[in-house]
Length: 253
Length: 253
DNA sequence: CCATTCAATGAATGTTCGTTCAAGTTGCGA
DNA sequence: TCGCAACTTGAACGAACATTCATTGAATGG
Image 1 (cartoon, protein in one colour):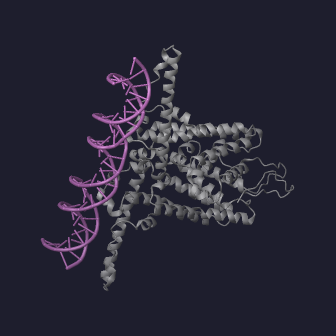
Image 2 (cartoon, chains in turn cyan, orange, yellow, blue):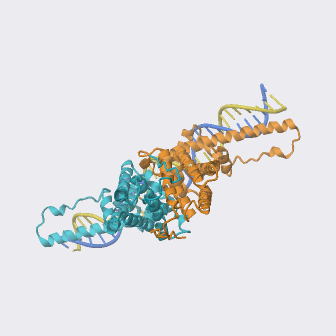
Image 3 (tube, rainbow over the protein chains, first blue to last red):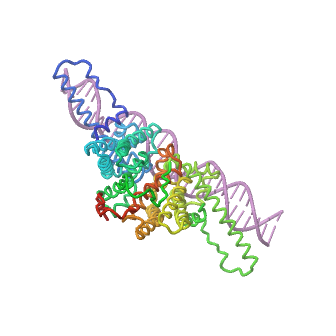
């Protein structure tokens, strides 16, 4: 899942970058195809190796944390030698960044896709987006947890990148809330806050899985959370009965 | 703040446990008082030292993470020698556990206190408890973040302890929701889920401070979040208009 | 069948760090 | 003033670890 885009995102990395000098000049078709298939095989191998490494690294970090992960252990788990890891990643730090970027990339791609597939209605869009978000988290719970625990460990650039990706991820939520407010379906709530809450609720499925999973299935959780949020932001459907709403509604800000 | 209970909680630790052999036989009252004041001074020193160490450790871990924290660095920051740390903690792991337990202890004490001070009304109790929760987080943001990042690093016993303390912390929230449902002020929502959401919203002030703080002050955040939650769970105040509430309210479990 | 290229290995290296402990210091009672 | 006990120090030790690199092995091309 998203392996392609990950490889692309990660490619900033190590050596290996001996850019395909082929594309310049080699008119023979057989020559071309030979070079191409070579190139292709190479790319495939690189991808496979990186995936191997990232999976092993994610597993180990989940158990022990970044600091408890030795490159030796990663190599063993991935079924290769230590040295080989350094062919595909410049160092331990870069392995961490790749693991984190991989899952953020899934969010960025899958959440908007699900929302667009859900049509125009803001409520349906929020539902679909939130469900997709939670499902990605559920599928990659280990990596999601890592993204939290070890973000601080990243280089400043790495952290900036992660922050930016996270902002992008929640932008569709903000837009849906704004759209709903515009149509009058939603109260005048802060799109930032609602989007933030949905994001946190999704993250919580990973962060607090030990507390939630015994009570709820993933689908139940998704249903319950989105219903709660929608209850909070739906415009009251009863324009009648005077303003005397009992409660002090100093809704702040 | 809560230093006392922390010292107690942590006491399982290192050597130092050369239990007061005095208590066996020394009838002279002057003897006794002399011994007592000695004991007291000793305890005070232990507390002061532990606090010194924990503050330094929390600061360093916030910047570098547990793995980036060397005992040498802690000693320097705390203004003491490496060896001395081992007089008060059995090892690096125990320092981490103490830092985490310290803040959880604040929650456990301060949140119920604030709720009890707020009176009987479930809504007011939730408001007060949530505000207290957030304020503790805000006051000790570094430690709160650590509790997240490094919980996995703890020993199994340490993790179990932290889990238990967290459950205790949110119990008052669950009770308030149940009470509100019983009086009919709240809809029939899951107390577990609502308490969980409030806890997460409070945690988020630490977890996502970089995203929230530019938009909102702490007080504004508290207001906005609790208002949103209460909007979601308040019973509709209009008993008229038939049962057709439109929404599918299969709020599961 | 040789030459070349490149993936892959894993022992060796240099460093960092948690922990220990022998030795020094301080404070207090006699 | 002496002696004792508790407190404190920090150099030293050993283990772990990230990273390197000389070497092996396999595939390709002529």
